Length: 161
Image: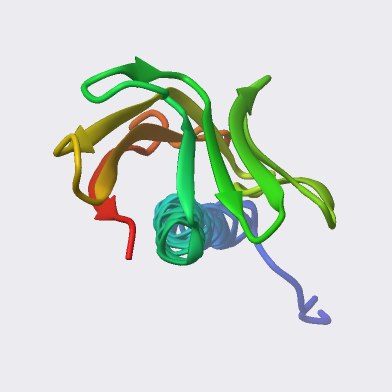
């Protein structure tokens, strides 16, 4: 009598069980890596945009000759107008973007991965002295993580030179 080679049904069930366990572990590792990448990208987008906005604000107010809006000391506004050279530079919140209007054109200061909210500009200083502006804003990531969006609040005060 010839001996037939092959797998028994029990061996096939064991192999299928091992394959399912291997696929489950591999899928779990893959989803964990994707979640960590999403967490990293989300946090990075908020931090990078926040730093850029603060640096641009510092650069512009450092070379401004005067603050047009908010007009009075202690006044608060959602817009900031700086007089730089012979032109006005306007910071304003439009549809979740902090826009800068300047002679070279209009552009958003934040990237597509974040939304800006709660923007306020408050003017400080002495009557005869140099004035300063306090900027506060909130950046929220547009990417949804399992723990929710990344939210950071920023605040700085910069004076005219």
